[in-house]
Structure formats: C-alpha cells, structure tokens
Image (cartoon, rainbow, N blue to C red; front, side, top):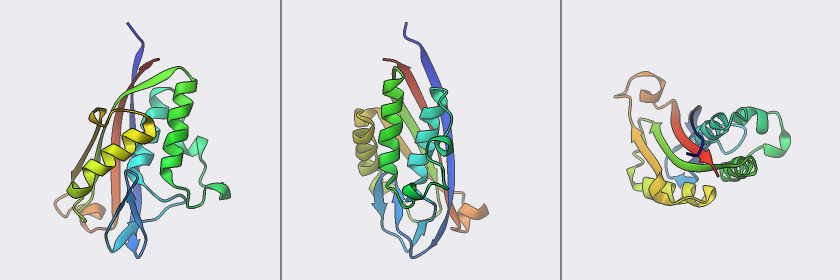
Length: 160
C-alpha cells in the first residue's frame, strides 16, 4: 500500500474597498477585495499550506516569503503550480483537496464550478477530486462584518 499523508491549511485576509477579489484562481466580482503581498487568494494559500504540510515541506511563508519583492502582487495560481511541482519532485501525488471558504458577502456559489476547474487544472488533477464549499458566519465576527475572508483546506497525498 502506498504511503499516504493528510495536510491541513488555513489562511485569512482583510477585505477592503476597491481591491480585486481573487478566490480559487477566479476573479470574484464584488466592491471589496482581499489585500496581501500577493493577489491575496486565501483559498489557494490554504491549499498550498495543506499540501506543503502533508509532505512535511514547511509552509507557504517559507517558500514564498512576504518580504520578497519579486512576489509582490503575484498570481497565486503560480504559487500553487510551484507547490504541486515541488510535491511531484519529492515523489508525492495529490489524491484530493477539500476546502471551505468563510465569508459573509459576496455569495460565491456561482463561482465554485470555475474555481474547482481552475484549481484542478493548476494542480493537474481531475476536477471531481477538488471540493470547494462556502459558508457564512451568520453575521458574527470579522467575517460577519465583511472585514475579512478565511479559507481552510484538507488534502490527501500519496507516494507517486
């Protein structure tokens, strides 16, 4: 039986007026967007951390530090592609990804199919093995006040 490992990832970013909002590699149309050193795609960042953790390769900040000027504004899909490539070079294959995004607004149900396809393509996976879900916090906390967005991801990897 192949060696399998599970990894978890988490990320959170502040939402502000007038910024682009990228989620799962897809542009979400909203009057607020997430801010960060890269494009602030919390879903991709959580998936990257889950993958790196499962393979015991550190975290996203080790591989892509937020004080590296070459990464300023970078498309997070590039980071995910590099992480997937690193796992492959270490002898790992991604079995599946399960994720959940917490935000009050906007509703992202119309974008989930595109997110799954985009994420799967970047990781060279079947979209049926990538799950993206969404929830609100029923107007509680910083998410409920529409001050931020967070994402969690769980991955299963196996020896290639």
